[in-house]
Length: 254
Ligand SMILES: [Zn+2]
Image 1 (cartoon, rainbow, N blue to C red):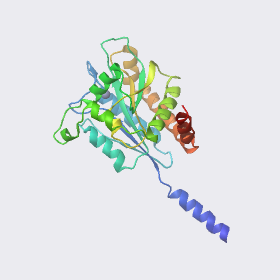
Image 2 (cartoon, helix red, strand yellow):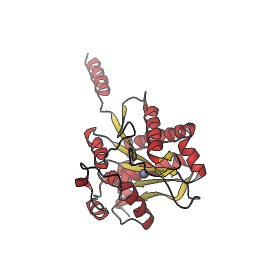
Image 3 (cartoon, rainbow, N blue to C red):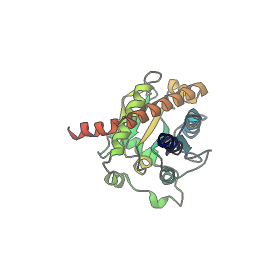
Image 4 (cartoon, rainbow, N blue to C red):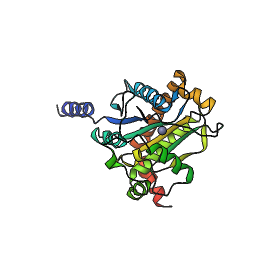
């Protein structure tokens, strides 16, 4: 009788287990198109890819995915971060596409939070990604980069973010190109303000012909979504197995 009760309790606990929640943030939106070339807009590409990421998780038990925007609308950066708090999310992924005057520049980059002063290229990109179209409700929340850097806290989610970025890069390189130093740290507003592991994914360069095809063709977008899905599952398994604590220890010993 006791074993039956324990079994029932076990399955009832399983069925009520807290879901793993992911917030996927399609960068830009509305008047803020982000990078654009001809009729291709970063804000459209990021929304298309983000929706495909959510589709990937449909049917996956105990994982919920929320998007910060569902259409071509302006959502202030602080509201995007706020959603991750409201949903008590475990992982925040911000999707972006890059651009460059150098048309040969191509490949993905994966950014996570940093306490260190950024290099010049990262600072340029962070300024651009942070520089959304201002709305009255968000002006109060706009801090300069120095404030953001000062406010950064060295907590475990920075290490977790790095583990996710490394996992994603490993899977990404099987199908797509990454830049020469693809994992970077930067003071991105949208990352700094979420209290959970968070990575900003620059999926490629709109200004490069080959990257542009990868970003805009539906079957390539689908593959990007699959890779991100596989990476989240792999990352979650690493976290569940305690990879996080051993990573912290290895860093602490450096
Ligand atoms: Zn962007």
